[in-house]
Image (cartoon, rainbow, N blue to C red; front, side, top):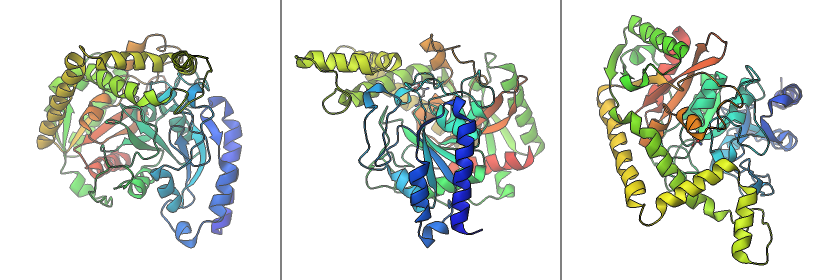
Amino acid sequence: MSSTSIINKRLENFLLTRDKTKDLNCITQDLSDSAKNIANSFSDAQRSSPLFGKLFSVKDNINIKGYSTTCASDILKNHKSIYSATVISRIEKSGGIIVAKTNLDEFGMGSSNEYSIYGACKNPINNEYVPGGSSGGSATSVASNLVDISLGSDTGGSVRQPASFCGIYGLKPTYGRISRYGLTAFASSFDQIGILSKELKDLTTTFECIAGYDKFDNTTSKKSVEKFNYSSSDTKKYVVGIPAEYMSDSIHLDVKNKMNKIIKFLKQNNFKIKNISLPLTKKCIGTYYILTTAEASSNLSRYDGVLYGNRVDSDEIVEMYKKTRTKNFGDEVKRRIILGTFILSSGYYDSYYNQALKVRRLIRNDFTNAFKEVDVLLTPTSPSPAFKIGEKNKNPVNMYLSDIFTVPMSLAGVPAMNVPIGASSEDLPIGLQLAANHFNENKIFSLARFIKDNF
Ligand code: GLN
């Protein structure tokens, strides 16, 4: 088949699947028309690139020139991007075809994809359940075969947790590994663009194409991105750490059983398993919500109806700000802006913000110490499989607790990935998380590959 007919065939398939999966509500914008034009004028270099012909969706908080970046918020509903994120140009350069933008929790704040102006996105495995969040639309678009690969963003688990709820791979890279240029900021010292896919190979190839230094994002590292070369005998030499704090009695029985099963499997394959401790695990959720709401209150101050955002007019300027922000932000976003503003206000700054920064350093030290003894950490990605739509959205703290196992790696800035590992007794996907030291994504990929081939 010629490369042009490959492109056309895949786009046709996309349209058919799009119509069949409409009810899942995972797409916010369909880009397939312009994708067809772009892909049909690909150069020979693009046609022989590693991502050639792969279909991509992109979370609607990442800029694509000429399209809206709504962040699932009324405040940005009419906002058109005037430039593309670095990840977008790198995907196109590598022959990838971007066909859709996907649903999310407003500004990436949430764990269920229910806090969205487009309404809840649904889990493709069972439509009564949430797909996870905030990159719920990305996970759903992959799990329902609309696209091969999706880009999401992960501040505290937003790629890994939905990947786990939908039964696919989901990587949050090392902080600084993938450019954030063109990603709408939520909490800048945590935010990372991540990759979701059904096939491990698609994820590792995408990683190789988009990771690495970018002059437009000065938090990206200049470290080179090493090619992923798998060797099962080298992988078997890894020491795998099991942190005691992630195996508590409060996790869902089916998740715990899967953990035990995989530990047994690794032992049978002569991996060295080491029981370790990450003592500050219980401080992670509190520390995360202090730091991320503080950063969010500052990052979201630009949406005031003047610099950015849909304005609600008023004769008086302070009234105009108030009305604009009251009408156009959702409840969860407002909750976080108010909390973050309080945390940063004089008199409280030292006791909350500065204190949380110090705890973050100690949490990072926990991980540094652990990685002196082990190559990879193995944990559940989420304490339970997907929950029902409406089950947690009335109780914010309950919702926050669903990130208990993903937030620590975000505080430490280390890479972590969800690996799909089967299903619960109710046929809902279960995922395990692999984490490694900074810039050791390849160790995660290697162990994931070993599990995929042999488990
Ligand atoms: N669910 C977490 C939160 O609400 C993580 C979100 C994210 O990673 N963007 O903050």
